[in-house]
Length: 595
Figure (cartoon, helix red, strand yellow):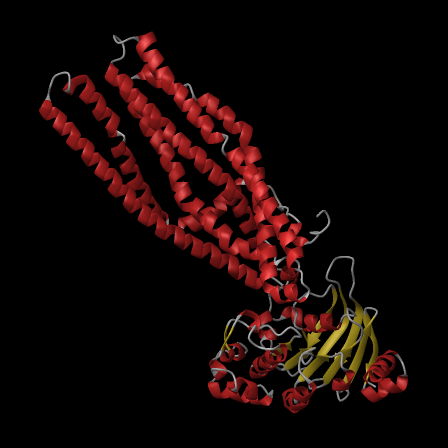
C-alpha cells in the first residue's frame, strides 16, 4: 500500500523547537492558582509516608528487644502503634486523593479554556491548513494527560523524593554501614537513566504524532461517511485506517519497550542490593556488629528505598510521554494570530457600504499570488456580481472584505476607513456572509437562526424565515422551529440548510451582504420564490454576489469578471454583452448549454 496514504493525515508534525525547561515553568502558571490545595495534599501525603515508615522500626524493636525479653505488654503496644500508623496512612492518603482530583479537573478546565479561546482568535487559514482531528486531539486527549502530570505527577515526584530522604534518615539512624551498602546501587541506576532518557522522549513524540494522524483521519472519515458510501470507498478507507492504526501500534510498542527498560533495571538493582544486605550483614560484618532485627529492618527499608525510586522511574516514563503532549499544547497556544486587531484599532462606525480596493495584492502562500494590484470601487447600496472561472479569486475578494485574511499589499477601505485599522468584531458584526456550504450547528432550527442575532425574538425568527421562504418547510418539520438538527444539519437537505442560513444571515441585519454561491443547492422553483425575498434583503445594502448561474445576476448594478489575478471587465450586463469579451463568451456558452 505504498502510495495510498500520501495525505496530511499520514504526515508527522514536526515540533517548532525542542523541549525546553521554560515549558514546565510556563505550565506552573496553571498550578499556582491551586498552590494551597496542592500544599495541603502534599502535607497529607507526607504525613502518610512518615507514618508508613514507622513499620520497620517497630518490627526491629519487637525482634531485638520486646520478643527476646518476653515483654508481651510492650508487644501489644507495638502492634497497636502499627495499626494506628496504618490507619493514619490510609486516611491521609484518601484525603490527598480527593483534593488532587478536584485540582486536576480545575487545571484541565483552565488549560482547555485558554486553548479554545486561542483557537477562536486564530485566522481561517490555520484551520484550512490542518486536519480538524489533529486540533481536536490536542484540546481533549492531550490536555487530560498533561493535567494529571501537572497535579498528581508533580506531587508524586516531590513526595517520592521526600520519601527517599525520610528513608535515608531512618536508615542512617539505624545503621550507617548497612545504609552505605544500600546506596551503592544508585550509580548503576544513574547510568541506565542516562542511556535511555533521550530515546524515550523521541519515542513518545512519535507516539503523539501517530495518534494525531489516526485521530485526524478517523474524524474526517466519520464526517464524510456519506461520500465514502457514494463512491464505495469502504475497503480503501479500511486499508488506510489499518495502515495508520498499525503505525500507531508500532510506535506505541517501541515506546513501551524503551519505557520497560527502566523499571526492570530498578527492580534488579533492588534485588541485588537486598542480597548484599544479607551477605554483608551475616557474612562480612557478622552478628556481633549487626543484629538480626537490624538486618531484617534494613532489608525492609531497602525495599522501601527502592520502591519510591521504582515509582520515580514510572513517573519518569509518564513524564516523558506527557512532555510531548505539553509541547503540542504550547505549540498551538504559541501559534501567532496574524489576523487580529491592531493596537490602535477603533470601533467601526455604522457602515453605509462604500467599498474600495486600493491596489490590493494577496496570496494564500508566500510566492503564490491570487490577486495582483486589484483596484475597484463599489458605491454604498450597490449590488455587485463576481463572475469568472473556478479558482480565479472571486471568493478571495469577499474573504478579504470580511478580513478573514490580511492583504499582502495595498488596502481595503469601507466608507473611507482602512479595515485593518478597525476592530474585527465591529467590522464583521455588520457583515452578512452566506456560503455555498451552509454550516448548521447541533441544536434546534430556531437556535441556528438565532445564531445570527442572539437576542432575536421568536417573532423576528419567524419573520426572517418567511422572507427567505424557509417558514413553509420548517412548519412541516416534526417539531417545527424546535426540531433538533444534528451536527452540520444532517436531517435537512442541502437546499433547506441554505434557506435556514439565509434566515440566519437576514436576522443579523448586515450592512454589507456576501452571497457566495448561496443559492446553488436551491431548486429553480424555490429560488424563484426566494428571489423576491432576496430583493428585499438586498435593498439598501451593499452586496457581493458570486454565482455560476449568470441568469441570476443579470439585474446587478455591476458585474465584475475576475481572472488572471485581477478584474478583467466591469460593467452592467448590457455593457459587458456589448463589449463581447470574457463575460460575453461565458454568458453565451451557458445559454447554449441550457438550450
